[in-house]
Image (cartoon, rainbow over all chains, first blue to last red; front, side, top):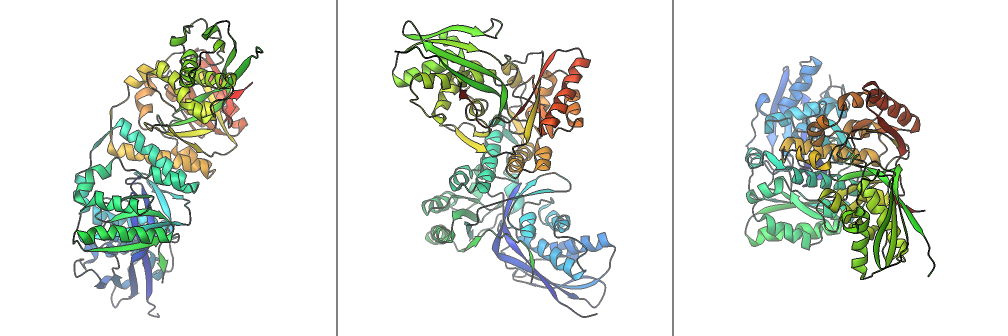
Length: 311
Length: 311
């Protein structure tokens, strides 16, 4: 048996996209995580190396999303392959950029190739979601789906199997992303959410979401901009994000179509029309953190139409 | 001055369309209301005749939606024209088919033509909404917008001016409509609604609505069908509608894509792929009421792309 090393890359993703809490997500092109698999020396999944995590991620198979995802695939197939696995984190941890989803998806895609492609790309989704169950306590698909399939995806929550709807989008839609040096645990970000929502708020939010996906499909930049509104999570969460209002205002002043919290934060993202606007917006957002002497990383990215890929 | 008689027709409409409570509506081709205006003998709005209402509608200008709508237009223009107005109801009252909206819209379109077209069709919306304010206690646009503009419209509630988003739809989408001989007052139908909605329900509903409008735009019949779900109003209201579950089941068994309450009821509607399916569905729905010896009217209609028209 040849010792082919197989590597897969899965990108960062923006969960919620402000207007679609727990049901909308989009894929970036970068940053992202890479998982490589080689033949191991004994049966089982062995996480031999993790890079880029500053030593913070566990290496035990059952404690790392990469191990959990691959194990769920082997169990489904009834196989006991010997795998030596390397995880290279390009994504900051606990950033709200779908870090665990990127690792989970890269693991699923790499393992699927290593095992001879027993599953289609779509069929990998439930396995990748097992990684989210470990990382977040619930098998959410809103980061996993775009990281795997690319593009902008709408997920009907609590549908089993997950009902993933791909939303067409204008090609010149870009994201400006700023990750300040602060941590927000998903658990804390969920604890501040209201359990009950006034009916009128629920209706307005649903109309905003329907208007937003319509704007995407009709390439109506103005409609995208005026419907990118979060009445549910943002008011409850923005206090957890350093300088939220100021960064958002800077993004909008720089010409962004909208700006909000990526996933559960602390990363903020802005949707922009075109690469130049994204560049200008990212600079304006980063500048706010510079003024407050808080370190940050900024990225710009088109929407990644492809999702996870074999390298 | 010639005594030109000007007549306008505005169609019935289905508010909510199940999945978009208080924000989605669609226009039927029939039934509908007609408003005619001739020169009056003295200044002011005189509702000289109402037909088809079995004598149930008030004739006083300030108590009838037709009078209120036309008066709001004259007030805006600072005019005191003499108008003799006739309203011909083709729509049953309190049916949930947008009866007051059809009268309001027909009045606005007829008066606009009578006055020499001072307003565009879109600009008539706020005037027509004044009729809804009289009839329902709130200036909702979810019936008025489709009755005026045609098609399927998404309205962002509580936006001022109303933000109307036209949703493209497949040309072979038809409606089967059954109006049982029972009355549900909009006021009662609103009283049973929950003031607060569990967050997860709100999120699922918003995902359904976004999926539904995506299905319409992508001509994805299966997606339209599986996302036409009402988690908020239907569970609270269906007890007000005679034989709701049975009629709905009959519609789905007959091949409808989905079935729900039109507006606040008691009319039920089903979305169907094609005219033949709509015919079959309407018959199946009507049959349930026949079995229960409850009189009903059935209609089938394509989606009315044009909305209100001058005759």
